[in-house]
Length: 247
Length: 391
Image (cartoon, rainbow over all chains, first blue to last red; front, side, top):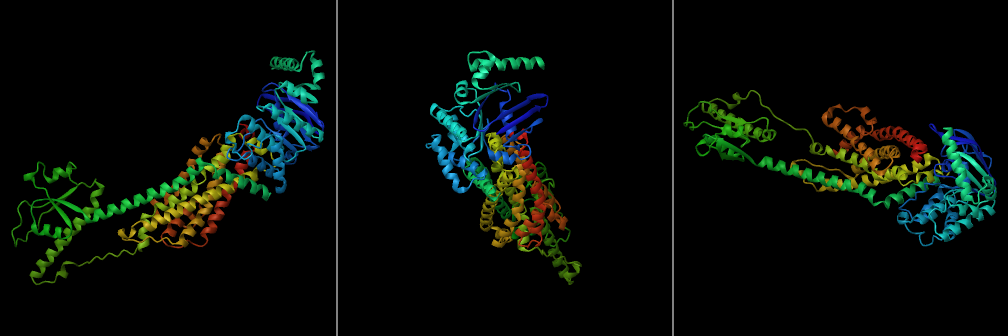
């Protein structure tokens, strides 16, 4: 379980997050929706402890991120929005390097890599240097290395960016399997149908605040719109204008 | 902990060995530094041989005995008389057409005339290249003068020893190897520079490169302390630097064996033990260099920025080089505790065939340690700054 309690983050005069509280239960897939600059990535960075909050706290399975960041990082599998690979390593070497940094047993690394390579359909690129990879191939490798250590919970920043249909389906199956194993899954996306298909809960973030939190149907009916996309646009626009007027 | 360190170390080594750009940057400079050094020394040897054997003296006027003496002593005489030239000797030298000359009386002295022979050495002292050959000619004329005097004195039944109340003898006590040291003064600088530069490209890729390809954030999301990551990178950088230093030493040993130093009248004999001692004293330098490079690299946004900052490090060995070169006598024990300055001194004496003080190596390690630790601590702290991760 991940709990975010009254988190605020300021960069100078800019309020990136303003008193955000959120709870992600085990066995739940939560979709994080927000326009560019709404605060999605900042929230994820706070959750892995790379940024420290101006106010509030985050706990993962009861462990405070600010106090024991390394314990929390071991429990999380994170795909950040900047997911650069080592270009002179093969896809497999990239994945295995992170497995070692996560402290996995040497004997367990190869089966774990093989498993993910098969799951994400990476057999053809596994032994190639990452230098010439397409966006989708880079994404698959980054995703695989993020979750190679079998983390307790998973945070993904736009994981289906640039993936083809078959791989997107594979990712979807992967996330569902994680959910079935009782893990928290938080993922951000700009694709409404992705969120509608996959998420148990949708959280809409705008101007650094959470403006909607519930199942897809709840969020849609809350705004009185016909679809999630319209509901999302309406929620974001109101917030943006309100924020500007407030400022 | 050790496994993580090993993982970072191996990954950085593999990454470096596959990096053609950084490999070129690391392994080409030793090759061309040694080649240029050999060419320079070879050229100096050639010049010295030429300068000794081949002095040309422009002469106007007549003094057959003196000229015969000079020719006997391998001086080539070139006539420069006003009757077949437009300018006389003085003007030619003033205009820079000739370097120096000897002006003798227009009419040769009558035999038996004991008047002093008026001769004038004409030269432009501002011309540096004149002094060597001029000294040789001047010496020959003093010799001629005292020989003539001795003959005259003997003709009158006196001992020629009366003419020389003081007899000056010169003895050069410098060993042949030490003479070689004068020529080899640049070698410590070359070695120190190769140790300072060795891992520049690799360190830039490990730090600024990590930022440039945006792989720093995912790296730091792993439960690995930034200290371990930096330490692993540092170990890899040090190993790579030492490979470069070993190559430089190897090439240099070959060059020193092949260069014809004996033609310059001295011996350069850098044995295998001296080479090993030099390598050992360069290890702390490599450690310092790699640590400083990582600290500078992490502050740079891109590979190119990093190279610009790091190239300043190459200038560091120049400071002790000029200190030692301009005042060779100021050696003191405390200098061994100053990184690079101490190395300059010890490398020089190792090349000259002397042994370094046995505690010098301890001094090198102990003085390198704080520098390395501070630089790595700084780099580790920078690594986790949001500005560095996301900037």
